[in-house]
Image 1 (cartoon, rainbow, N blue to C red):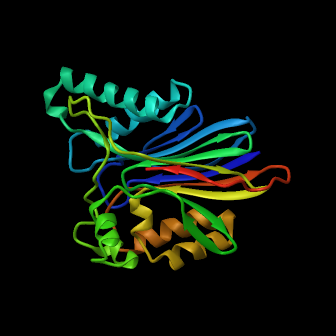
Image 2 (cartoon, rainbow, N blue to C red; image 1 turned 30 degrees about the vertical axis):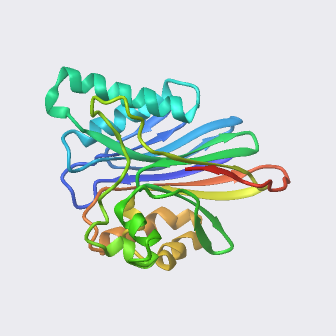
Length: 255
């Protein structure tokens, strides 16, 4: 059984360009709630519309709706989502380059595919710590890898909002960079999917304290964001996955 605690909020912005896909349901606007899923296959995605472009909220919805309408095959899903955006740009040239970044998890029985395109993230929570499973496509990630800044500096860096990959309506045939990783599920696993509006709001240790009580986790995260200097929309999904006893297998990842 999967219990999904979710929140999406406009924060200090005038509108919310984030959206969440919970299996076959797309959550938009300002929403908070819990959804229980008992299917063996389930898809959860957070989409963060690109605020620097027109109609970011529409891009988020189009991308999630495209995923919702198809069986899960990440590369094909991303290609189809981009085609949807391109079709809209052909009808309205003012939408050129509108798009969104995504992060998500596809559950298939006792396996999970972790994926992202852009700087929204997927974490696994275990023994009081959050482990990032996704890979940021961003300028600050590149700076970390070059040794020019440290991980803790990413959320405050002037270039923190500059992504190096996103699903966009840009009228090209180029597929955006994405990351995916397959893992085996333990008997009880907690995942956290979030937009940058959450992970930029505090040091990882501050965010981890919100997971000490999952019943109040979303309320704690909301307070953390709103008391920070983050002005972005923010969205998160906390997944509690309960299975029978299973052993971990080696993970397979692909950038």
